[in-house]
Amino acid sequence: MNAAARSLLARALIVLLMAVTLLPFLSMFSAALAPSGTYPNGLEWPSDPQWINFVKAFEVANMGELLKSSALIVLGVVPVSVLIATMAGYGLAKLTSNRYKWLYLVFVAGLTLPFEAVITPLYYEVRALGLLNTRFAIILPLIGLYMPFSVYWMRAHFLNVPNDLTEAAQLDGATRWDEFWKVQVPLARPAIMSLMILLFLWTWNQFLLPVVLVRDPLQRTMAGALGAFQGQWGTDVPLLCAGSLLILAPTIILFLIFQRQFVAALMQGAVKG
Image 1 (cartoon, helix red, strand yellow):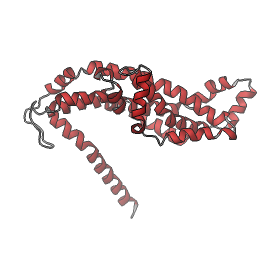
Image 2 (cartoon, helix red, strand yellow; image 1 turned 135 degrees about the horizontal axis):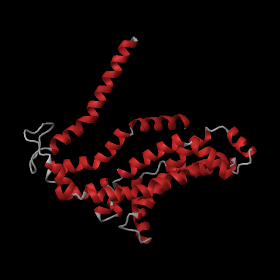
Image 3 (cartoon, one colour; image 1 turned 180 degrees about the horizontal axis):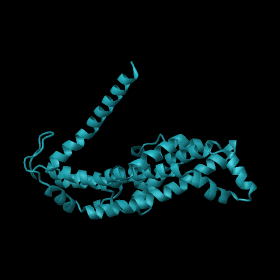
Image 4 (cartoon, rainbow, N blue to C red; image 1 turned 60 degrees about the vertical axis):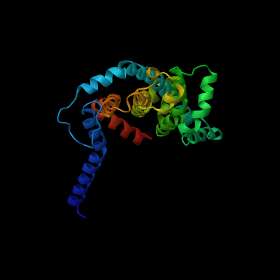
């Protein structure tokens, strides 16, 4: 197969992948514009689009409060997780001797632990701490559950930083703390940015923990509140589709605005890792 044929095949596969990815969203969008109370049939543009469905869904789902709740949860999870993971990744990569390398295996083992496997003991632990039905019931477990991947990610970056930089900083009289903040952290910006983006998306779209640990939908993430919205308006398919698209909108808008930084951060993080 020559180069032109390979290029044509690659473009055809990309177009096919885009079509398969966008088709469900287009179907939801067309259904959201159907008259309220009807049952849309597949991908069919309505003759009289009901844009008011999005306004009604925003109001009945109390999207303003959900945006606030999701933002508070993200602000509680992402900065703390990134800070702890950066320090732990640096410590595991640069400060531990061979006899303590087994600590790294603990975090690797954590990568194999699905959220579903710990949700029941986590529920009783959160209840014992008196945090059930509060946003801390989501924030604190997510910080812990994100640690294995976050530490693995940051350790992979710091392992690829030459030790000559550390030695040069020490020769200039820098302490370990100064070297970490003034030398290592600036070099780790691509890895830190990509980790922040991933944790933001995972936290914003978190569904299981908010549903199990928080009873009030207005204290959940937007994705977690979808369960309550579906239970209340599940028979109104256009309104349900409109609400689902509104819940997805912040992450889609964020990606469209920062798509170059998103791709560059992930690529640089992958190269560093």
